[in-house]
Each structure stands twice: as structure tokens, then as C-alpha cells.
Image 1 (cartoon, rainbow, N blue to C red):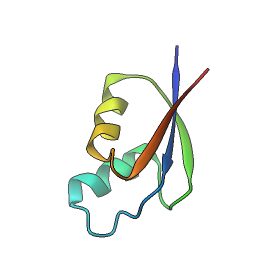
Image 2: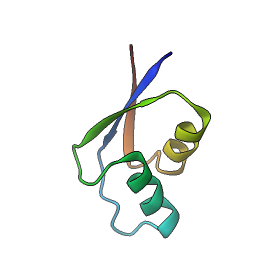
Image 3: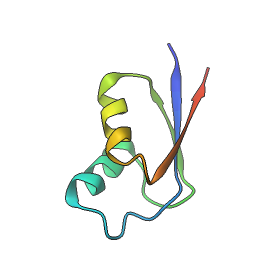
Image 4: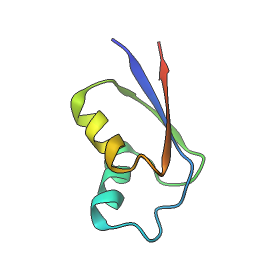
Length: 60
């Protein structure tokens, strides 16, 4: 199964509560932090919500 490496590249300040919740659920707290998540629809949806704040890479 493919994995997604998600890195926060911008601040959540100024975002709405949905975006704050998505970042929290992904496990991201500060700029530059990265997490690896499985490539599943629920994670894709959270990433889509904050796509302007994160960078996504596919890893094996």
C-alpha cells in the first residue's frame, strides 16, 4: 500500500475550525513537521481541506 508523506509548509493562523481540525487529525502541529499516513480516502479528504498549507509526497 502506498504511503503519503505530508509536510506542513504554512501556518494555520487565519484558517477556519475545519482546517485546524484537519491539521490536528493529520498529526501536524508546526511548520516543517512531517507525518507519514496511508493513502486512504479519509486522509486524502483531510489533505484536500488543507491543500494550501501542506506539501504531499508519495513514499513506499
